[in-house]
Length: 74
Image (cartoon, rainbow, N blue to C red; front, side, top):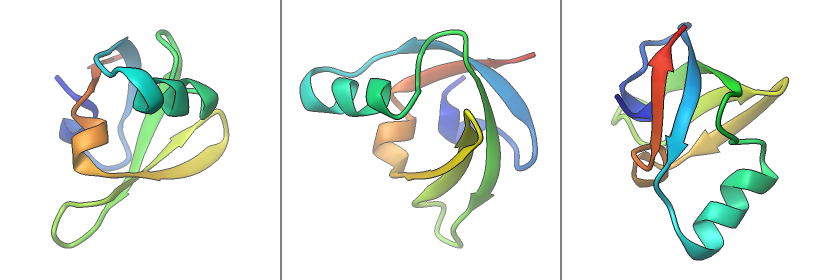
């Protein structure tokens, strides 16, 4: 399952990040590291972007970025 598929107010664990180059570095810098917990806060009316909470920060991501992050429920 990818990050964009998490239900609102549910928590998951990052299992894998399938990104390259600048996007991968950007995600790592924001705390998207394998094993970290992530919570879906909200989705916009058109589902893009989404807002997640990771390491006590609220971050907005595009759907394309969220689809590169594989997660599983706790």
